[in-house]
Picture 1: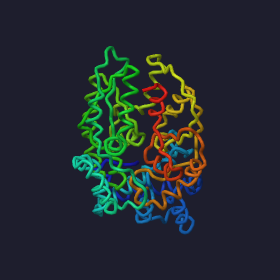
Picture 2: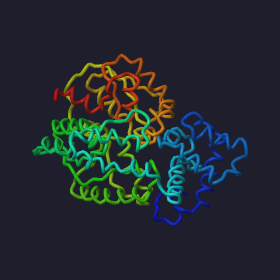
Picture 3: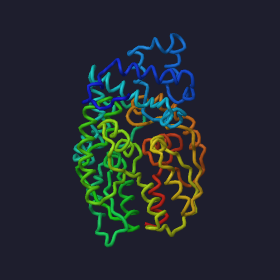
Picture 4: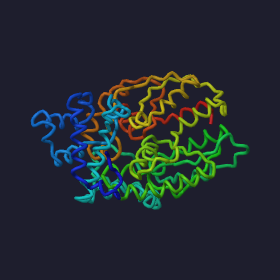
Length: 400
């Protein structure tokens, strides 16, 4: 049993949490496939080797949870997840532990500041001054490595100028644009609109979406996370009833809106949220859209951890190949920056992402590509080159 709903009495049940932790730790102790994914597993195996699984304590668990940066790679590669009888889900145990610990101890000022991504939109009203103000806040946020730059440009203001009436649309979507697009990477959302509308897909914007909640999960604030989830879910359900499909360009946010919300809200009938490339590939397979273009370029591609966890395949790779790109997939593990954790613990993030970064450092391809803008930070550190989102490669191929 795993409980992530802070309104559920068992969320704060330490006995149940410790019982589930020991159950899963006993499986990990005998398997050790994940020994080199992050610092959680070497630290846990050191404990289990020295005193055994039965002697593990709640404090042991709370300490381990601080090392987890929610990449979900241990789940993706675990041979014992459901439907196996062991029903392993170690990342959710880490989430439960962090949420329980922070519910009891409270958030630090730094953690409270770092989860308030919605406040960045207000800061941006200061215009170009916002960039300078944001730079000054980085030490307060605990950021000790490279971080995305706040862009004064308002995604929503620019997107409104692009939106047009689509006659006889082949499909219609509402865009969950994400905080990363709104505050740091507006070009991804704007390019998505260009591509979708060119292909005859109606795009609708919604200004009242809140952050998906990944930064709250990152610091263990499940109360605030649930508030955002309930707010977003009401909007998502409204659009589904109106006949819209929902798309998101960032795998982390898509993951939150689907898999995490189900556990958080204890609700199975969550609206389907498509990865933006998954949706295009779906329409292409159904014969509703065609990509009649050629772009004979070479691509080095990093598959984001959270895209792997979504389990929808590498749709961006398939689409880029369909227009003539030669794509080299770099499967060298996590970039190390799975959200704010990696920005606050950059020494660890750089070590975790070293193999992936080495591949891009040596890369000679025309484009470096990933759906994850935070992984793009590591690509830029390694190579000095800006990573593109697959939707941007498609846009160039379509000549837009």
